[in-house]
Image: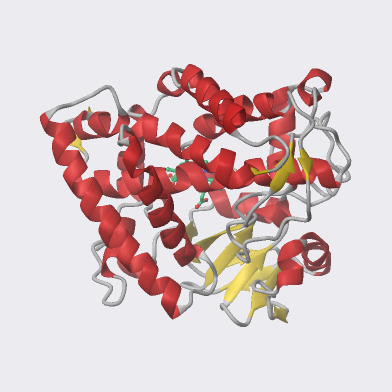
Length: 396
Ligand code: HEM
């Protein structure tokens, strides 16, 4: 049976504004759809997404490159240099060795120790804004989130603006289509980022501190240590993954509450804060899809998939699957099933979920002291994969 073909409207602004009705149609009409523009088989249903996350026939690593991760891409040399040892692109022994070492340097205790810093930073930022009108993203969520990850890693504050700029440029490479201009900017940003972190690691090796870059330089398991390139890729991944999705979750969450006429003030007194966070991340996932290569001919959702073809797991769609979540289109803070896919699953499950959850908890608890009102309809960034807004003007 052939997979039904569609042209996925991933750059259509009306679709991006609210992709969920269209995704529901896809989900209900067939388990898979082949996007003729990207040649990706789109997986829309919860069970199929879960299956792919834990199935050894699906790989995050390009099968052509598994033996040689040091590929030499001509056009985007530095972008690929920063991606070569990104955990997101690795599989097998190398992935589990690297992930084990990084996890050792990124324990829950170290994350919990950041709570007082987060509380102070969040309160300070909210005391500095103009409560009549401010941009929740630029004036609050971005500086909050970048300083938390910056503090954890041990990077100097005066570099935060550069990190934001570099990371904004680089993440554009993760969308389904990348323009030549975005590609060039991402390459330059990756080069600057790479060179900066390269030198910073040297400083940390000479003069270790109580921070994650120092720990990554020292950590070992069975006589194995991280190489310098592995540390650079990990630091860049943590900086990028560590703020973009969290910032967008804060923006998406406040907009979602406003759109659904749920007052923010005192919300945590009515429902468990942990449930509020999980439900908001489920309802409007900040990361909408991740891709996998198919390693062997296999079957999924009743269709055959060919070796070396590619699939995309549509996480936001899976989270709206009525088969997995009762009345999935509604926000329900008393939902029993909180097992959403927004943090992924299987061996690539989000390594920073403990940090993201704490950051969101501290941040939302502070915001819920106010009746946060969205002042005018916010405009989406235009990207499908990384789901967020350009700005979110609010009053408190
Ligand atoms: C709300 C915020 C966040 C969301 C929704 C999120 C989501 C995800 C998802 C879906 C994956 C799996 C990707 C895949 O299956 O290929 C992932 C992986 C990852 N995330 Fe997060 N993330 C968030 C915050 C963070 C933070 C704060 C950090 C660290 C500072 C982080 C670090 C990572 C890393 C290192 C991986 C790669 C793990 C691996 O491939 O083994 N994330 N994240």
